[in-house]
Length: 61
Image (tube, rainbow, N blue to C red; front, side, top):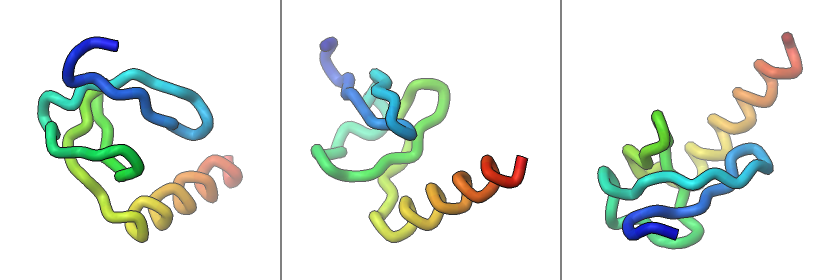
């Protein structure tokens, strides 16, 4: 893996993303990802709420 890169689980799929915009992320933390970049840390509660809303939206389609 390249420097400043990380593997993340996105809905059960592993993706490689850049940490260049958010270098202080640690293993086990949640991040907001856009266009292959971690752009912001997100607390666990907010991450779970967002994931649940996205899951409900997908089920409604």
